[in-house]
Length: 230
Image 1 (cartoon, helix red, strand yellow):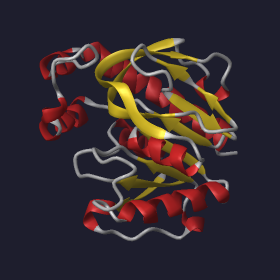
Image 2 (image 1 turned 90 degrees about the horizontal axis):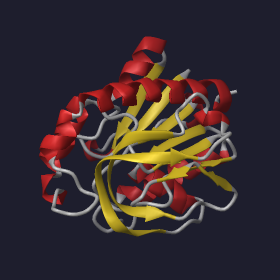
Image 3 (image 1 turned 30 degrees about the horizontal axis):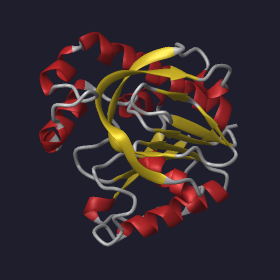
Image 4 (image 1 turned 180 degrees about the vertical axis):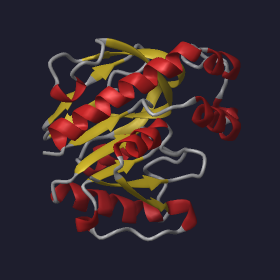
């Protein structure tokens, strides 16, 4: 399988997805927007992953490559590629599919449980509720024709699946201790005292969450490989 990913900033990378692709022996390529790298031809990959970032989807004046990125993601969807968007990536895809993207009532930063919708093949063998890592201030409406995949106390729409090929996750299943340290180091100004924002010390201390997250990430990616990449 050939995987291509879009990376917006140096400190938000594939995290544990990299370990999964390495163990599977899949081909992996990337476009790093901050380094002004080129996009691949659409036929050169099977699976597109769109990572997170601190920018908002509506900041095209500040980040002019956002329009080019949206056009590329839309083309990938139209060509029936499997597409996974994470946080900002999920918001970009939601916008492309015609759904609203806007400021959430609360910023959500830290380990909070998501309750998953039942009987979804791409979430088979995952627990009904899972503590995942969140780091976002915006949210989205569920795109028309999509299935909602779950919710948290702070955010009603935590993800969606469109035509069993396009998946948007508001939360981070890919987070490793190292990737979380990078987020904290670069986005520390967002950690404020609030109901759904945890301290950096606490976020880094919950070792069992990291282990459980990686285990369930692998289950989820295996489901994508089996169900969406047919």
